[in-house]
Length: 337
Image 1 (cartoon, rainbow, N blue to C red):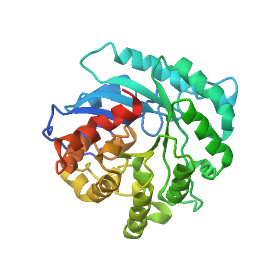
Image 2 (image 1 turned 120 degrees about the horizontal axis):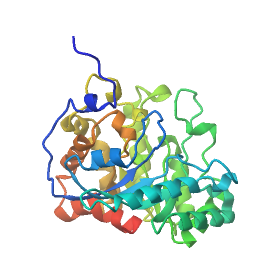
Image 3 (image 1 turned 90 degrees about the vertical axis):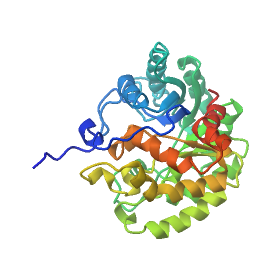
Image 4 (image 1 turned 60 degrees about the vertical axis):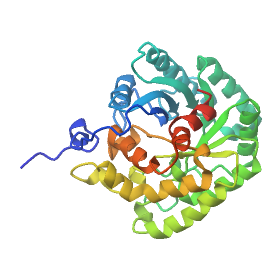
């Protein structure tokens, strides 16, 4: 009897091997994290990122997205996230030393938008620490009160309706930065109201607004998909919102690959998730969509080369210009890389 392989281990992921589709296609991966200390996803540092980005697809650049790691241990709480920017800026500098590997080209950090106008101090500190790479912040809004989710937003209510939060977003926008966010599907209506209240902001919705499939939301996929579809169509009416297409391989979404004896193939990935991608692309248009890896979080379910093969299979029905936008151009525009 063969040993049971641990999900996320290289041996578990390597059970599925595929030829790389369209290996010359230029790609910006606009969403990954870095951890220098092991969490549930393990350490994920530059060598680990390069092992993924160098696994066959032509990943030219990446965008780091905040993950509340490497914060300063001392000083005012509002300034502790600067430590993450300081750390990633140094890693990004190291990434520029190897022309054969992907370059970390932009940093999206965290700042507490509930500070309102006072968030300017934090943003200035990020700019100073970012070595020219700081592009914006993520202040996410997931919240669940069922007690059935591991990642329920820390028990904090979604901040989107708060006037201080909206004023912080206005200050962020006035300073020329973008705003990324992530939440559960239950917060889609609050997010829509936020996007409408601050139409001048450049806002990026991560992970499709996370249609849940675990805990209290297990066995409700069709009901949730129906409401999610309406929500996405309404959100897409806001021309200031861009959509990151990825992150559906998170455990939160309930596809269950993390618990299987082997990860999915790209065909299995496409069969399970195509409709989410097609609906979002239809609503937003390719010019406001960008494919993302969300690694190493999605690494709990699927390998990097197989994921991008799946994304290329989904994208194959679109024109060359539309594919270029979703794999490269939209991210280049939003994050100024």
